Image (tube, rainbow, N blue to C red; front, side):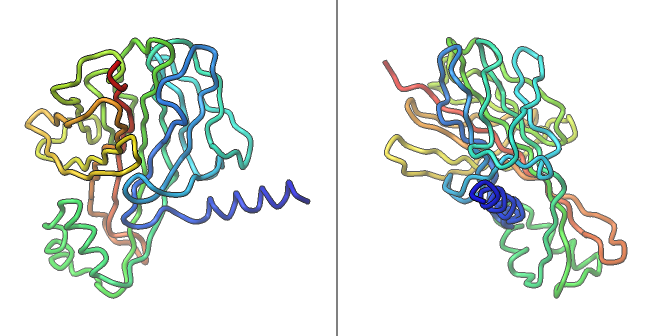
Length: 269
């Protein structure tokens, strides 16, 4: 009975879809682990790097992998596991955790909520486009997908992040565990494999005492943003794509694709 209760609780958590303006990210228990140590990470949803952990539920994702040196290893968990990732690290080096949700949907009955989201994520033009398209403001649907990545160093952590084939993703252009990032952490934001120029990147910076600072940054013509980082802190970078959808019956009229990347910068020795 206790096991059934745990599974039911996990299922209910899975049904609690990520909220409309909240980030989803992967949060490793440790960003640097020794070879042979377990690789453990939570799937979290919330604000300012604070939110509940979600369970390992295959129905909730369409991809959950570990990538090292181009080799892809699917995450094999047990239904209801929390933390969702409890795996043996796939060898020494830089490991990229990859998680993609299934398609999720949201119904807006308050246009101001959509407007607040659009303004915050730098899509002011979507509000005028909504009206131009003759869409309802009283009730309309959005489809959204989350694409999360995280960088973990196993042993010395040598290696580099790379594109992993997501519809939208943030690619680290430096290794924060082995490279000098005192001048900033360069990342490239992609949409359908192409660099996103002049895109907003929201950076959540968590200090060792748990406090979080939020800053906004923009990509250049090559889709690159250089993010300010500090030794001993952990980071969540977030970028959102908003696309119009052709309305069909009561179907969604907007598609949002969320990309996130988490990593840490080692404390100075």
